[in-house]
Image 1 (cartoon, rainbow, N blue to C red):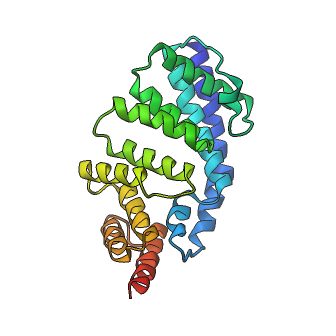
Image 2 (image 1 turned 90 degrees about the horizontal axis):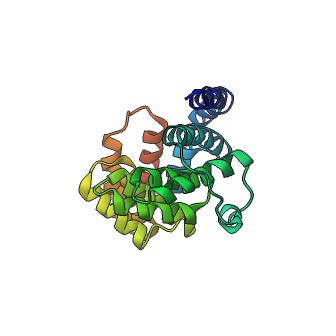
Image 3 (image 1 turned 90 degrees about the vertical axis):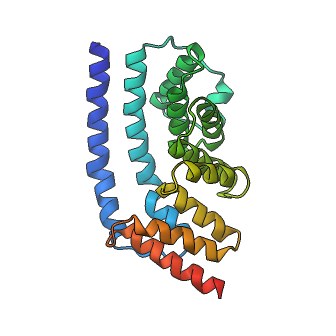
Length: 234
């Protein structure tokens, strides 16, 4: 267990540094910005790619390290093409991915493990591999609206941000489980906008807006996009 606590302590320091030096200045910046396109709905949630990736990777390194240390998997080496398919990664990222893959080789019915692997690939921008892991996770974990919406999101990212087709089907399934899922309403509104269905886009975003703090940056952005969709509908 000493290794477990050393890993935990070290990664807590990484996350703290990411929050202080990256996330806080970024939050101050986005409060001053006004986005005017439907793409801004997603941008306001994620910000610029650099802060989102830095903080996201730090958090997932922490979560994955705890998962691996607790379960003590047998480490095996995946093929180089699997590791390097979408570009180089830092050594610590490679080890985390290898560890998760090894853990899942030993226990392929671990839905939470597949979900964690999927999210780890997603924050690294490896959307195709993330989608494959999400497919396995959703086959093992039933009726999880958040998981279905995240799966839809990475599928869309893997296909040039296109939400039509299977991503939209997954979002509909998620909203049947949880009609108020915020990310589901966000994405289904964007899907409707992409398809030129501005009336439904307004309806979905208005429902989302009701659940948001009125003075939040996201509420302001959703309001702007509602106004734009209404203008397009005329």
